[in-house]
Image 1 (cartoon, helix red, strand yellow):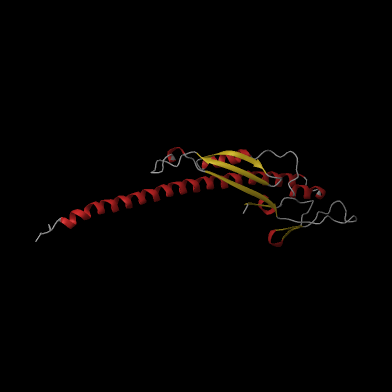
Image 2 (cartoon, helix red, strand yellow):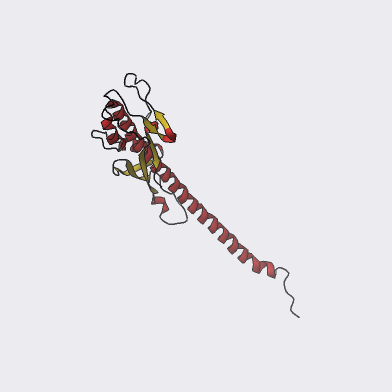
Length: 200
């Protein structure tokens, strides 16, 4: 009768053990690579969101300034609330600044219509080395659109109201602004007149 070595089973199991451990290590590195890519993508998306919002907020502030300049002429208010204002300074410079603060750079920044900005960014740092070939030279990209939305409505006074009567502004949450043309020291802030948010 042939006697089996007490170490035979252990010797056969060792290569299987090595294969299992190698497989688990490979999966761990694969998950790490996926995590690296996701983190890079999230960082790029944060940069794109911040850049688009910065550009839109800059334009919002300019629109609010234009409204203050013509506050005594309510016939010009609606054009400003619609974004139909000549002479605005391009706002993409703010997008470049915010993207740089988030370790990315703007590839495309452009107004979309009168009250929105589209921004595309690319991360400054690559995804990094991983078990996936080529990731060391891959850069995350992301896009965002920020929208400027007027928050106020008004009705022009009737023909007999007189030139010294300004319309009541009804803004967000039904906040009313009754403006006194003889005392304009308190006026709505830009955020009272316009909302800036990312498009869905």
